[in-house]
Image 1 (spheres, helix red, strand yellow):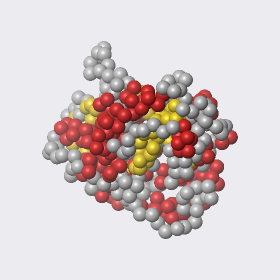
Image 2: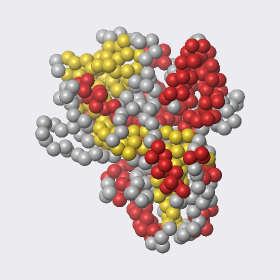
Image 3: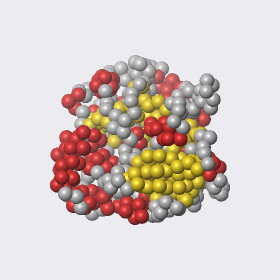
Length: 492
C-alpha cells in the first residue's frame, strides 16, 4: 500500500466513483472491502489513521458475547458466533482461539454458568471452537496460577477468540487495495456534495500537504463510529443525536498477575459490570469499565476512578494483587452505542441504545452504519453495501467477503530491537512507512506496532530512535522529529 500511488488514483474531479466510504475503522474498512470485492469502484477516506479511534482500543476479543445471553439477545449472539467462525478461517494468524474460565466461588456457580455457556456452544453449531466443561479447583488453578485460591470451587471453561485489532484493520485495508479500492488515511472529509437534493460525493482535505479533493460518487457511506453525527450534520444540519459514546478502559499488567494462557471472565461484579483478565502479547490485559456521559474524542483519557475500579476488582480475584505501580500501560476507547434517528419530529425513538448495529439512509441518500462491534464488522459491511447499492442504483452483486482470505505480510528478517521490553524490531518501522501508510510516530508506535499499548515507559525510551528512522524514510528534518515527539507525548 503506497500512499502516493493511492492519492494519484483519485484522478480528476470529473470522475465518478461507485461508493465512497467515510471512516477507516472496523466498519468502514469492512464496507470498503465488501464493496471493492463486488467490483464497485470504491474509495475510503479516514480523517486520522486506520483504526486510530475506537477500533484499535478494544478488548482484543472476537466473541459471541456471553453477556448478551443474559439479556436474551439470542439473534445477536448467534450472528456473532457465526462471524467469529468466519474470522478464524479468513484471518488465520490474526484471530486465534482463546480458552476462558469463569471461576466459581459459590458451589452452584459452575452449574449456573455452565447452563448458559452450553447454550452458547449450541448457538455456534459447526463453527464452535471447543466444548464447555467444568474443571475442578485444581485444574482451574493450574490454568490460571494467580487466580485466588481461597473459596475456589472450580470453574466453567469455554472458548472464544482473540486478535490484534489494529493488525486486523490493516489486513482489511491491504486486502481492499488488492481488490481495487483506493484506501487513504489522514484525509478529512470537510463537506458533502449535493446535486438536485441528493448526496453525490464529498469534499476532503489531506492532512499533511493540505491538498483539497473533490470526489463524486453514486453513493456515500458514513461509517465513522462515535463521529457519526458530525458527518450526518453535513447532510442534515439539524439532525438529532443518533450515537452516544460509552467509555471502556483497559490496564496492561505484567503476565505474572495471570499466569498461563487461559483468560478469566467475571460475568458480574458488585455493580453488574463484566471484568476480563486476558493474556495478550505476553502481558495481562485487564478491562473493561463502562462509563457513559463522556465527550467524543479521538484519544479519550481514562478516568482515575475507572483505573481504581479495575485495580480494586482485580484484587478480589487474584492471590498476588496488582497495584497502580504495576500498570505498564493504559488505554481508553469509546463504544458508539447506537439508536436510529427519529423519522419525524416528536416521534418516539425506534430503538433504544444498542450494542448491535443500526443501518439507515437519509432522504438525500447518505447511508449510515453505526453501532456494532469488531466481531460483526464483516456482516455490517455486507449490509451497508447492500443498502448502498440500492440507494446508488448500482448493479446488484452478491457479497464475497464471507469466504475472502485477508492478506497478511510475511515476517521480515531479524533486525535491531526497538527496546528490550518490546517485541518489535526496526525492520517493522521500515515496512510501516514504505508499505503500510504510516505517517506519524503514533501510527507506528500505537498501531503498526502496539508498543504504546504494551509498555509506555519502553515506548518513550525508543521513540526518538523510531522518529529519526521515520524522518529518514519520509524525507523529514529535525524539526519534524521534534514536533512528532511532542505530539506523541500529548496524544499518548
